[in-house]
Image 1: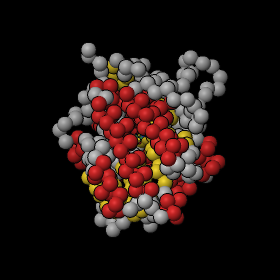
Image 2: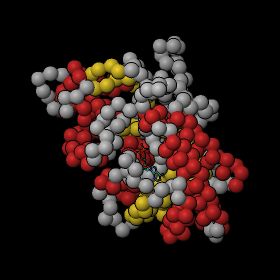
Image 3: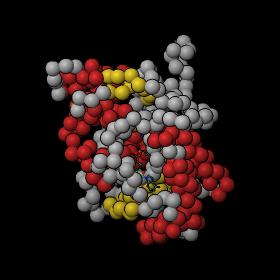
Image 4: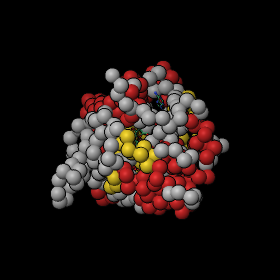
Length: 357
Ligand code: NAD
């Protein structure tokens, strides 16, 4: 197969590109604008492959999208390009509206135009896989608020996004489903929980805490730190996405999760404990924890029911939170130069997403 991956220089996209190049005979066309979050250094291990092509293109640029489709003639699209950081969406929603909504619309139209002109067998085999988030569902009851067995997000859960980021992703999901229903365009949607692992830009909780801890800086916890996320190791997600694009059914939605519900404070304490053993010092890393004002509109709990992925596509995560987190920390310890290069002076792990006016 020839797969056009958008956002392949980002955190999850680069894991998808590495996974496919290493484990299959497929060809990848990586289409990425290279925003602050996109880094070709994350693809060094596979950039020499003759099955890998890179196109620096903005998904808002329709003419360029048409050129890429006509040049490379892909069999499938895996759409990961997005603005992805909730805090940045609070400070500046505009890029999220442009890329996540307008960009997805442009990509759908470029892909549909290309698909319309394929011969019948290529048309039947074509897939447009839209990669989305569990944040579109809003938040779930927290153990503080409800006793007993707590609900999980299923593929039937109604959308109720809380942040500009999740609202823009929800909009893009709706566009993708409308293109299926209205035009018969062969789409599949996946909604995944929080990912973690190597090559994660250090604005997100886990890499930020690892790097701040090592530099002796504060480890900022939003609110009480009791927000619950369902953590999935990024390579498990990449494997799941490849299964969906190759074996998933047209028109279906698949929820992908890690069965790892953890409070943010637990995550940070676990990182501190692992660092205490891997990089011991006179004081304990947990002493660097500080509590800061909560994120506006912060969702309290996310948790995914991924039973459809396991029963229909025979996928389950391989990593537990403990094994995945240890691998992640070891990767950051061994790849300090990647961390320095991707921050390139424009971002110093400062607080983002506070509302001042
Ligand atoms: P990321 O921010 O690390 O990477 C996004 C990539 O998209 C970057 O390489 C960036 O350069 C590129 N990009 C941004 N705007 C673009 C544009 N206009 N045109 C072309 N390329 C552009 O994001 P990520 O964490 O890898 O997430 C990838 C996808 O998965 C996103 O759609 C996100 O919503 C979704 N997702 C993320 C998570 C998570 O925990 N990170 C969980 C579930 C779903």
